[in-house]
Image 1: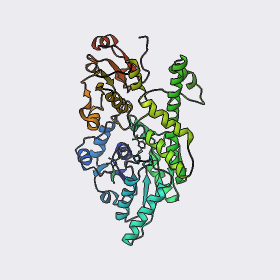
Image 2: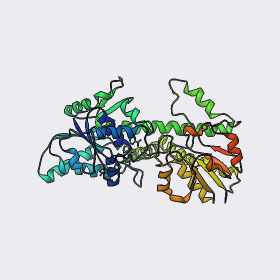
Image 3: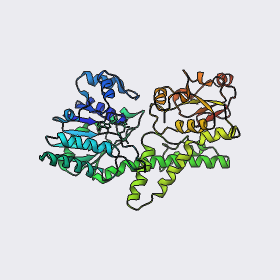
Image 4: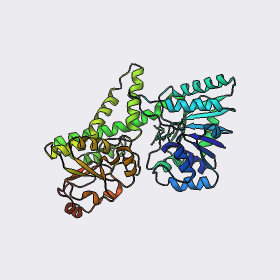
Length: 424
Ligand code: NAD
């Protein structure tokens, strides 16, 4: 079986590589030539645990190919996945220009029956737009090849992406033809051997399922962040409240951590996009609007705590920041709370010296040398007025507190993830 994976980012590269593991011949495509050049040399452009050896192995075995040509990738392919970005437009809606550009390119070169799969997170109705775009290109060429468009949203988590893809909790597939269902069943068969379900449904439901999942998870986080604020008011401990409610199976223990706000490439944009989509149907999604508002406040709450501690005056003070990525085990800094905190403190005249195990290159690419970077966590602490813990990487969990106290000119920690015992 031969497939094309168009868009070789966090989702495309992981999905393509995992399909290659099962014996499928996968051609990954990207518009970014430098990315494809790197991958062809065996250099992995992103940090994702376990990905590098799998890419190299499958490339060497002749199972995994990289190209910039969609035309080349879909030759004789049974399936083409669209896994390009869907960033937020100015009004918060999902920007579909990359998805539709790929659809149009597919339409220009399609020459046999294929299943076109939307793996990107896209609003309800996008499959219809992809279909119309391809159909339009076929008409321009005066040819008529059959094809199906399928919705197959991706639920992998950065940092644990390979495990999530190889052993998914569930696979959601929206289809409208038996032929497409048959092809998708064949492709995903190796991934459901753990008895987790493959759920077939109509396309609109599949498209909405992805947004509903992210909206629910974001809601839990904003809810717990508000519970944490209430805890501070009444003198309770949010970690205790979390344990107290998380053992109730109706609630469950996951995604109940109060912190510095959610970030990353998915939750912020998907919450905003769902609010925006419902508005098109004259519906105001009240709960999600609050979830989004609470998170915007939460992303700068640590900076506000720093300011409050120093009576709103941090001019010429310097702070160490541990963690820049939006969560541990990734170098992804899209919508990372670290960026909001840095911006806020710099506006007040403070300096930042940061350390992150993998995201410092990405930070330099985004904000250049507007902050300093340290070689290791302790280097960052020399003569600073405080430490701001933003990302709970494992290596920050049991630090040498005495050494920290010696290094810092003011030994104060702003713990954005509640990983330290205040008394210690
Ligand atoms: P990404 O930005 O890492 O990768 C997208 C890639 O698509 C980029 O390399 C870009 O160069 C490429 N691209 C853009 N236009 C192209 C074109 N015309 N032809 C070929 N390649 C093109 O994005 P990502 O994080 O992999 O996300 C992709 C989609 O999957 C998004 O819709 C996202 O919401 C969704 N998603 C992401 C995650 C995640 O954890 N990152 C999880 C689930 C779903």
